[in-house]
Length: 212
Image (cartoon, rainbow, N blue to C red; front, side, top):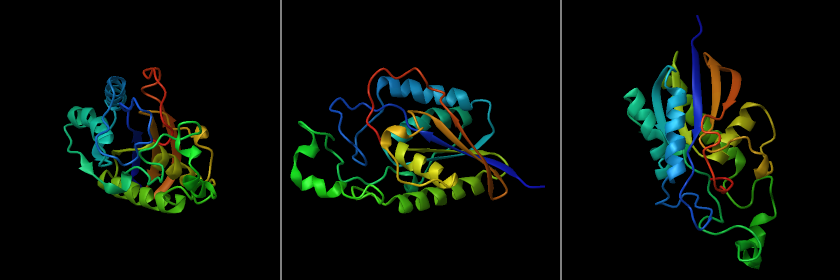
């Protein structure tokens, strides 16, 4: 019989980011108080599932989101660098006009090609590394379920790739809210279903930065 395996992509919870910058891969960005509640809500959602493997991006916010799951299932958190946030030229800046980075002409050349995109890691490279991370998780949890804690853009690009949709998109149209779960169900190595859940819906009170 063919093994059924589910790999869940869990986006981290809300981050403490009072300046509203695109923090990307910068160190030191922890979960906010609401983010901690989101991580706990996600762990509660997974409580009755057959999770046997847990992976995480190396970023602090992802590791903090993984922690309640590790406690709940008594599992180690395996860091997989392929789950990390996407590279972005605007990392560490506020994005927009007015006081934002777009008022400075030296940044404009990074916006000329939204299809690649020109401001950061190519979508095709992002899809490839996320797919490799999912395959690792699928093999580690074969016949059971795995959780991979990652970030909005990597998870969304992986979903677009899995559903054979174009990779370029408008950031406001991503279906990947804070602490949401994108689930990939496999029969053997064949992807048969993509699901989406929002276990922490209603917890966040403040704005979030797209792509975080």
